[in-house]
Amino acid sequence: VRGYISPDSPSPKLNTLTDTLLKQEFDLCRKKNQSHRLLKKNKKLKHIIPYKNENSARDVNDKLIIYSKTKEQYKLLDAWRSRDYGIQRRFKDTNIILFGAVDDVWLNTKTDKLILADYKSQQNKDEVTQESYFNGVYKKSYETQMDFYVYLLKGEIRRINNINKDVSEDSYFYVMNARGVEKGFDGKILFEEKIIHYTTKTNYLEDEIQNMIDTINSKAIPESSFNCINCAYSK
Image (cartoon, rainbow, N blue to C red):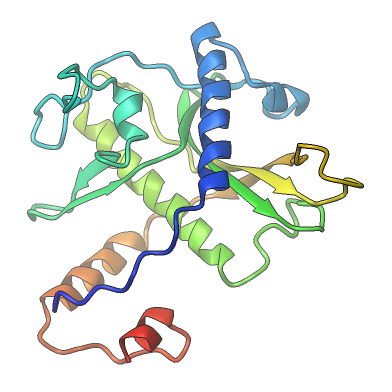
């Protein structure tokens, strides 16, 4: 609001690389219209495949999204996963355009519902489990992130006429965890892979988004938080 912005953190290059490699892996499955190797290992998930859609992407104003360099049209999934566009949704009847770049969208072949998937890479000596994954304060942001993605996708699906699918409340985190159990580096880091389920909730989001907009439009500065690193930086 005041034009005072906290500094960006360094880009996590290794995390970005693992995301890129995993997207390439899922894209190969998408071309073959088959499930991913880790999904196949889980009997409850083997019917889930990467979602495939070759339609051209349009923004919230129904304009084709074009690559600035090649002048070619974005495919729908490419736009959804692009940090420049992402999944877009107009907030109610305002001029506020919300967006988020997702890692992947899967398809439940039994229910024909779309599923949001997010890739997470980390280093933790403990094994990743469904029961323990969401322990810790910062993991709350992962839940909010996924809730928001589902909220965006629901709006996007309603806007696009040729996608006759619902969005599932079920979502998944594909977690790559480097435990450091190797005896030496030997030119490689081993990642253990786990798929963590999360049931999304979106009914609270519009109130929170409205609070955010009201705060931006307010002349009053909100009280700072002792736990907020941005508040500490600004002081």
